[in-house]
Each structure stands twice: as structure tokens, then as C-alpha cells.
Length: 353
Image (cartoon, rainbow, N blue to C red; front, top):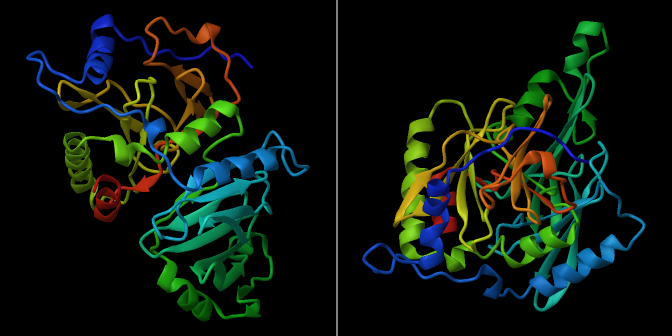
């Protein structure tokens, strides 16, 4: 459906600054800044198997317009899993597949609302659903090819104001409040990234997810990686101890085969994203802030990114200087970007080394 919303206007000079160097790969003196490699030229053993599974699922009775998927490492072994989310209803779990030894294997089902909350520092999942006056959740790890439920919990303390009889449960058994809090205490400070609903099932975004999204580490030059490391470290130091949960991502927003660095302020409703691009051997920041809830949405077919707020959607494009939201219609190929990696030292090292 067509939406008439905000528009980012880039001057011709700004557009050249963002695209010229990445296309030429050289500065004014002709000295090479970095070697440009098409991310689609990078191959991984899991790509064809995951593509076949997505095609199969899309033709099944489980598929709907609300289905989504993700390519995300939730076993902590450095190889991404395929996560398929049938829908976003409260009881919806994710189907998780891994690729090992030349075979696609289903690990199992986990999560709530079609989402898995993965905590990379602990290599665990902390899945939780908050209903009207109650909460249910579980702590899950990956062990010997299967998910291992370490702990389940539930309580309805949020219903105390309406006079409900309060209960607390750990692993299905009644618990006192001190027992309940003690059981959850080891997991209270775990910081998680939501996975499962990063991509819709449009052909363009499936291609992007499988052939580009995991290739940036292989195609970026050492200079580009160093620029990203320095910027992320700077932001990490500035935000340390301020109570926010910044994150970051890499995504090619203009189709030049070079990723932009996206830094998310946090996951609260007011959080936005900053966008950085490579220019003249440097990392430059785009004017303004983008997105909502610490994320942006990206139309991989039309190279348009947008914010989805209660007040409506705002659209921008850096791929086309004549872009107008009046003429734009969202495609079926949408990616959720901005919060793929928590902003910490371990994530920076893992992505850029």
C-alpha cells in the first residue's frame, strides 16, 4: 500500500560523496583505497540448503503473509542457523535449522511471538512473553545438537493491583517470591538480540539474506574494518554505563556492493539509528537520525529504508536522488536492520577480525 511520508533529499554533491569512492575504489591521486568485491561472489556451504528449505516452507500450509525468517548464529559456533518464524502470535515458536556435514538438520522449536532472544555473551536464549498481568519464559542453551531447557518460569505479579491471587513458578513448581527471584538472578543481566523475524519471504530479500548479509566480513578491506572498529569503539566508550543497549549492523543501502555501518541507540521506543558510509578513505556520518525502536526497515528490491512509528512511516533513499515517497510502493522484500550485533568488544572483534 502506498504511503506518503517523510523524504530524505540528498544533494548531488552528497550523493557523489557517498557513491563515487566506493565505485572507483581510489582517491583523487589514483591511490587505491580498498578492493571492491561483490558479496554475492562469496559462497558458503549452507546457502543452497537454506534456500531450498525456504522455498519448501513458502509452498507449505504453514506459510502466511506474516511469516518471516532469519539467518543468525544461535548455537555460538560461528556458522549461522536458519530460523523460520511462522507468525508473530504469542504462542508462535521458531523452527531452527542448522547445516553440518553437508546436511540440513532441524534442531527444534523455541521462542515466543515468532522470536528467539539470543544472548551471545552467555550463548543462551532468554525467551519471554509478557501478557496481560503475567509473564512466562524460559532459559535455553544448545547442547549436542539439540536445545536444552535450563529453566522455565512464570508469575503474575503484575496482576496484584487488580486483586489477583499471586503465584510464582519455577520449572512448573510453585515457588516463593525469594525462591523465584533467586532462580532468575543468574540470568537477570543477560543482554539479548532478537532473531527470527529479520526478513520477509520476498525473492529479493531472500537473495540478500542468503547471498549478501553474511558476506561483509569477507569483502570489506582491512582499512574499512579498522574504520568501523574505531567508530564502534568510540560509541561504545561514550555510552558505557548510561543504561542504553546500543547495537550495530552492516547493510548495503544503495546497491553499490559496499555496506553502510548502522549504529542503533538502543531498543526503547525513542531510540533511532545513525548511518555511516565510506568516503575518500574515511567513515562519514549521514546527516540526521533514522528508524524507530532502534531499528530501520529496508526494502531490498527498491533500496528504500524507512521508520515505522505509531504516527506512520517515513521513507528515505540514498540510491536515487530523485526518490519521492509519493511514488513509492513497498515491495514484499523487507529486512529489519540495525540490531544484529550487540555493541561490545566481543561483537566488534567477531565481526571485524
